[in-house]
Image (tube, rainbow, N blue to C red; front, top):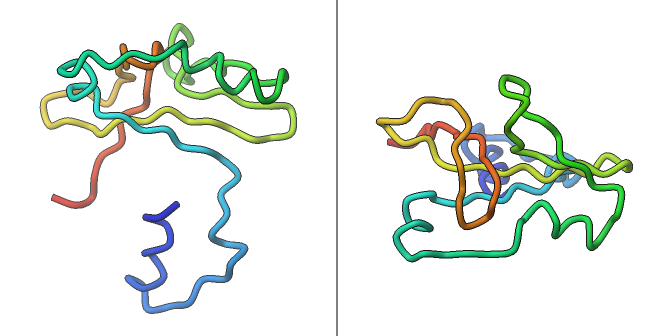
Length: 110
């Protein structure tokens, strides 16, 4: 959401407060850093269920064996993201520390 708030200044416009709300939660992690420090957490897909029992894993659209998102009945989504590294494909990446997969995102900043 912080990055989204910068768009108005970049475009020279003032965004309304309503346009700053996205309705989802993004959890991002650098896979390589996590592996290097041997980071580990409980299965991250179980955490939202502790808050709202209606949270369910959402299979990835291009590979139904992978999960990069969970969603609740009320529409709230939690997306798991990771930076797209130069030498990797755009396919989902495993995040061992979070016990889930993540959708790689390309950075527009070089």
